[in-house]
Each structure stands twice: as C-alpha cells, then as structure tokens.
Image (cartoon, rainbow, N blue to C red; front, top):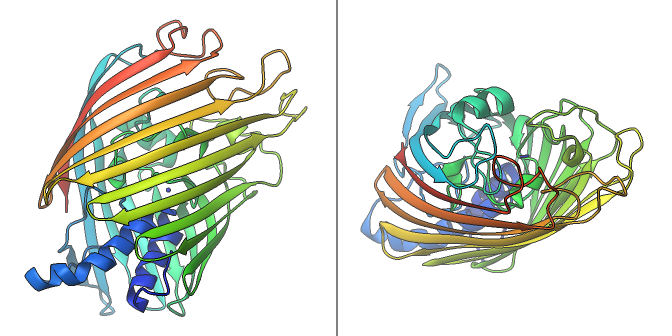
Length: 408
C-alpha cells in the first residue's frame, strides 16, 4: 500500500513549481503554479505570503502564510511548521480487526527545513494516520509504528543552480496524484488508485527543469522495502498558466521477497505508470488521471500468472469563498487474473474491480480548519473472504468522517 512549468511563467514561478513537482509528486506543480499566478492580486491587499511549498498541498487546505523562522548558529534561516489534527469516523462493514467507529489523531507532525543555499534539508517528525477508502483504517499508532516510523520524510538537498538539484534520504514518491498525509490532499482519505502506488521511499533523486518541463528521476526502495531496486521518474509539462500534463512511472528491476504492511509483495514487484492532467484556475482545481500497473509471472514469488490493474480518477475542488470549499473524487479500478491461473491478488481477489465516490466540504479560518467527508466503495467480482465485513463477503463500504486541527 501505500504523491511543471510554463514558458509564460516568471522564473520564480518555474522554480517553485519544479520544487513542488520534484519533491512531492506531480500534483504539487499545479498548486505551486496557482499560487504564483494569483499572488499579484493578493499582494495588492496584503503582504506576500512566505508559506512553505513543502510539504506540498493540493488544497483546499492552505499552509500558514507566515511560518515561524529563526537563524541557526551559521546564520542560515530555518523554518519550523507543523500540523496537529484529529478525526472521528463511522463506517459500515469493517474488516476485522477494524472497528465500526473510532476517534484518532490524524496528524501530530512538525517540519523543520532550510530552503536556501547550496545545501538544504527537510525533516518531518511525528505521528500520522493513513486512511484510504476501501482499505482497513490505519491508525496513528499502526501508521507510525508499522509504516514509515516517527520520521517519515527526511532528506538532504544539494542545489548548485535554480535548474538542478539532487536529493537523498527518505523521499515522497514521484508517482500518483495524491500524497501520503491527510492534510496534503483534497479529501481526508486517499483513493483506490493510491493503494497501488508507493508512498515514501528511501533513495536518491535528481531534478532538472528545462523551460516549461520539469524532470525528476530516482533510484529507491519502492514500497519501503530496503532493497534499492526501483527506478521512478516524472516529466511535468506546464502547457500554460492553468494547464499541466504529467507522465510518471517506475518499477523494480529485480525480485524482492519482503512482505510487510508497508511493503506488499505483489505491488513491490510491479511496474506502474500514470498520466495526470491538472486544470488550476480559481475557483476550480480539476485533476483527472489514468493509472496502469502490472505484476509479472514469477515462480519464485508463487505468481503463476501475471496480473494488471487499470484505473482512472477525477479529483476536483471548488472554492466557494475565502473560507469554504468543496472537494470530490470519483474513481474506478479493475484488476485482471483469476485464482485458477494463480494470479496475485491486487484488489479484492484476482479479477475483481471497484469504484468509489468521495465528497469533502472544508472550512478554514487562518491556521484552523475543519472538514467532513462522505465516501462509498462498491466492489464486484470479489473473491469470498477478501472483500468487506466480518467474513469478507460484503461488497460495499460507506464511511462518514470529520477532521479538524491547525496548520502552523
């Protein structure tokens, strides 16, 4: 289980968009681009925002425009930001040991970063829950303990020029249109397609911008496997100030036998590709994307036949006013294979498929926010015991969630 430049943009906008796309996935480019294009109007009424562009946020939640900063012993400026939020959830047909209802800390995280100079760094520390539609809820205790530990993201960055940089450490993936943590996304929960994507990987990454195109390539451990046999990459083309097209993909070049919650064995031995388009023109942000994954036949892994997933999603948000917005997501995913031919299970049994819809209204006042969420998943062609409910034979799941907190 598991995160773009235009020739018409000023150079500063290109740099911001590149940083967002290369460090936190393609969806960030549109956010950075929108922030750049709307800044002049905002400056007329208020001082320019100095909000951090990392971690990336697709909106509608926005980062604190006046983050706390201080100088270290060498005179370098450092920024300290963070998020503290909690959530409540009620759901139908939970999969044991999941519960019908719960309250939890969704984020208790702090981010320290240096964003200027030849050497830069980013460190994210704290606890986090990992809710995703159609999957058992991952609590803050389980997420922090069994996935990416209390330091989920930490990397150094060498930036000799504005166009080129090199990163090393625990890096957000280049793949997908949704990010790992709740506050980064339009919706509280991530979607069905996100479950097929790596989220955070250990490795190295190079970033380069050439005119309107931002390139990134990474050698990493895929689904947090500690085996450095994945290569991922992305190319984000900002067509103009409101339209961005991104191609991202990757895969492993050897066989890895590790199998944990953070490292599902089938997905970690897969190839994946995304085609992502983003339209960002206030008050609308619309991101449709297509995804394909494939797991090859492997006698050593016990996969008697290959299996693939095909999926598509549309994510959209609309700003009603400065404080209120609504967001939604609709998606469909289908998997190939069968139990008879020995295909690995990538969804709710070989050959299963599912669709989901999610609706998330949001209210934010300064650093404070609250949002509610309704989501529904319906699966078909499932394998008995691998779907929803106590026995794994139910085909649907509905959730009602609320999340609130501060972004400082």
